[in-house]
Structure formats: C-alpha cells, structure tokens
Length: 135
Image (cartoon, rainbow, N blue to C red):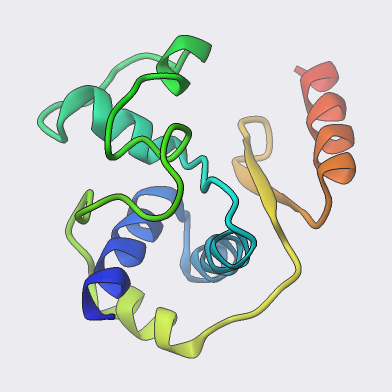
C-alpha cells in the first residue's frame, strides 16, 4: 500500500548510506517481511526512545532493543505504524525498482563505514564476530 511504501522509505532514509545501500536494505526488509521475521532496525529503536524529537547521542544498549514500543522493530513484527522520517522522491523511486537479493541480515561496520550484508544467520554471526575482533 502507499502507507507501507512511505514507512519503508522512512526506514531506508534513516538506515541507508547511499542509493545502492538503500536498495540492499530494502531487499532485507522485504525478505524479512515475507518470512515473518522481526525487522530489527536500529533506527526504529532510536525513534521509539526519542519519539523522533531529538538525537540520542549515545550507542544503543541491549536493554534499548527490548523497549516495548509500537515503533521498535526489535519488539514488534512487521512495519512500524507510521513513518519515522521524511521520505525523499529518490527513495520512493528506489522502492519501485524492487531490488531483489537473498540478504536477511546486515550490520554497520564502523571501521569501513559500510553495511555488511549476509544471507544466513550463520554467515551473519561469522562476519559480526570477525568485525568485533578487528575493533
């Protein structure tokens, strides 16, 4: 629906670094929705904690991820009830491209300043552990 497009677009605006990154994150969102997996998008946790009114100015904690809020996609299944940010025209156009991948997981590598994508949970954990050792 139009509302879902805008909500997904808002997630991409907050998570994606550039157009191609947003495309890959879009594919993760669609793949997770199809599998009825929680989206687990950090930007929704930040929005839930701040009501979108200020910058958090700290890293998320494990307890933050458990915060019971209708926008927290670590807590809820599916999309948040409303957008978490403005959505640009380019992001909406990107959604209509319907980029496909087999990715189900990603995390942000602070060393390389990129998102690292994985197709399986095992692959994700291996990449995440390798990243944590490199810090």
